[in-house]
Image (tube, rainbow, N blue to C red):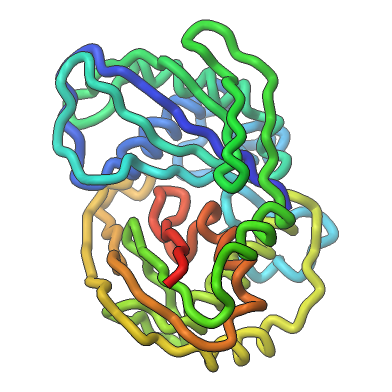
Length: 312
């Protein structure tokens, strides 16, 4: 499993009016720019005839890889990218102000980084927000959040082939810094995970969070990194039920976004706030640490399901 995390910095050239949840704005503008940048075929409502030979087809219309029948029943394959909107809620930016957001790609999607940089630069002309405000793409930095390493991949003019992979070993080393019996999880963006057909209105039970990660991370690994996990996931989720919620400070929030693909309003909702879990956590700590970067639950590509793990 390899992730590639980036921080993108843009400077607005004119006043920008943005929605309460900026992740939907960034992802929507990126999708339009990326499609115009690299896909030669119009296919509104359908799929690219080139399939995964087209960068857009692979990134936005991911299909199960050949030979992996285990995933043939999953109609919705995990996309190989995650956006992280700016922390805090803003409704506008003045000319000259900067916006920074995260952009993580998974496995072989890193090969398309030049396309991604070009799409971010195309967004300069297309504009973002309600009034399509223009901005200047100033900088893109590759970073490893666990080690603190950074490499500049775009300085406003020149793109460089720099990669800083984040691996499972990095997550395992990060997990060693946490106590084994109690942790605090801060849900930074709306997080919605379903467990046994139900969605909790407060902090999700630990087993629900573990199950969501044990679905998402192995699928990302198999589809985009070519590595299948061989494990009894049900038994591991059952062991996660022994971990208790000892503090719940989370609350349900909801935003709405307009989907140009489906031509309708859609909710982006889940819980935000803190929770503390206690119990036999040790085997789950690397999973929790890696999940900070992949996110958990629904609409992760928009930046939902982002959380931070801390010592309690």
